[in-house]
Image 1 (cartoon, one colour):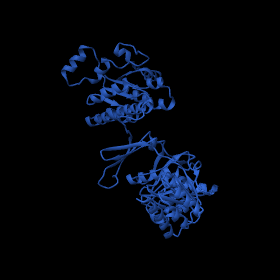
Image 2: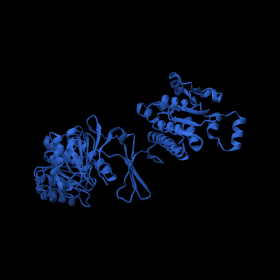
Image 3: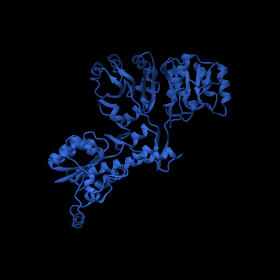
Image 4: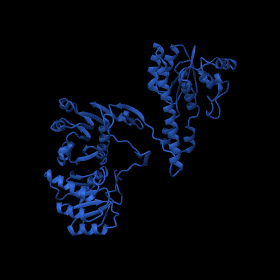
Length: 511
């Protein structure tokens, strides 16, 4: 008879897994709460203390850290000396270890009580996982509930091959590595101003056909099961570039709360954005900004796509639409678009966004790491009026839209918003005045009237020339962070042209 050691924090599916093991002639050994769960379900599981001949002690801190456990796991079955040793000491073999670890992260989210958090650092669990993984050719190590069925199938069918066991071993070390990095990160964030080491740990969602280019491998990983919980493929397959564009579009579309915002992104930058009375009107107005660039673009809809919207969207080749949901008749409309990809990111009827507190980017030989940038809730509302002129409520809303779009656009950028819709945008320029003038040139080409628009920049205007250009286009209000040595000249220019100007005090570079 073989022996399985089951000790899990997340008990989902553990009873059924144990029953299947018993039917395969496994003896079950267990601990603490897992033991009670199994016994209550009528499974005759043996208490670990019967194996170790020691009681669980120190409030459960010590229960599996014992030679009777680790000797049973770690001895090499084909090694005569190992067999002689375990026989000499009466150590029984353990052939399968099923462990998932104490809920450390869940505890930190639930409480700030450091004593309770400390008690949810697993010691024996990772030790058993690492022991079983080290001896994977002889011991099956199971760390994920999703592997219960594959393991039982492999045991039933005799397909628990070296390669199968090795795949479980890899998952096990990934599991303990992620767990340790989570604890280290929490402790450093709590007690240190900066970390000596940063750990980035994500779980594979899916492999991608390729990366940014066909010769590059690519894959999607997730934090905190974000994609498992909220992302659904409706039509097509997401690519590396699709996912980066979706990220940028959704960040902007959701930055206005529940407002019916539609954002169009191409190559990481917005080329259309609007908030009107409804999502249909928002899409129509967003598209007007730059329908040429929108061709083959990614559209983020902060709500449900209706049949009416779908019919309008079908007039142009779009590569991706991501929305909270699609009406059934809207999906019928999209059936004719073979190359169109449809995805949902749904949380309570709006586009879902994660609470990512940190941001990082690869650089030569390493990565730069920082707090995530976001426009604060009242950043525009609390912006300081600097000139003689004031913006009314409608203009303040346009300033907010322009400012939030600018914060999600590659620097240097300048945005122009009129009546809730982006009408001109210049981005990724080495000169801010070039960005401002490029945006106006494009608006003229699209026959869009910028007169009466609000203008925003993610960083200060270093000279008055951008203000003069804005005045020539009929801009009526400007918002920027301020902080230039020539702020006084910029403010004076706004006053001369009758433009209301506000300083937010916060820069939002995006490089």
